[in-house]
Image 1: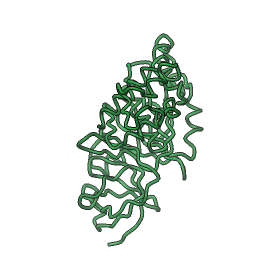
Image 2: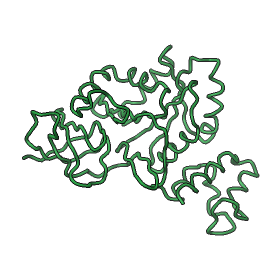
Image 3: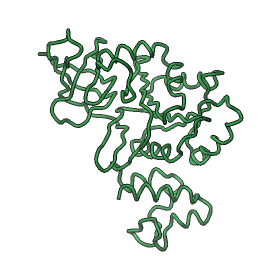
Image 4: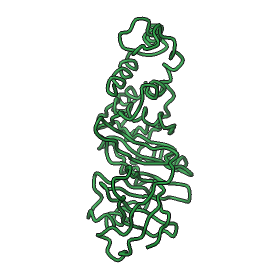
Length: 297
């Protein structure tokens, strides 16, 4: 049995597909109860010697190499690793159906904690009658410096910009179901459907399931990672400080509260409440911050 390096390109439950340096694919599992493996992890594998049977594990993950970062979500019971070594996350929303701004906020906070560039893609921007409503929902994010790109696979709006901005990056595409993320993937990855079929064969899922995270290699340094539609995004793995620092409008006021143990709720002399009262921040954002802090306490 030989040991070698590979990169995880798909995950489904505790089963993974990895690509080695020669381009060969390996169906693999983690040994024992190791820390959860994530797509785009660089790992050390041991060949089990049964490469002729793709329905059985061909290799075992022995070790996860050090990560630059980890895009993940969590609740009080479980921590879900989504993708590792990520340089940017694109969160896809649309003019229709409606989307949840708080889910968007939670994802942005998780990215800020890992120093991952976060961008909003406003898809289906060709639906002019619905555009203003969607733009109003994302205006608070633009106000704090979050980039927004308008896209449409119907008329091609923004697609060339996306193609340019993925070069040399490890990009996660995520968001709620129904926002047109799959259509964007098909624009950016011409052979996406063929790749899905190949990965499904190795994972023995029979099809691209709604729980499969999958990476598409588009060049030596260019990777696109497709994450299934999100319904929840818990932040239990974060500290109070990490959440607070993800709100740039409140950063200048941290440490200015009357009491050092201020919980930024109804505490007297709270500097964050004062920032809202003097107009340098909004009450909507303060209430969001309070909800996120309450969730992890």
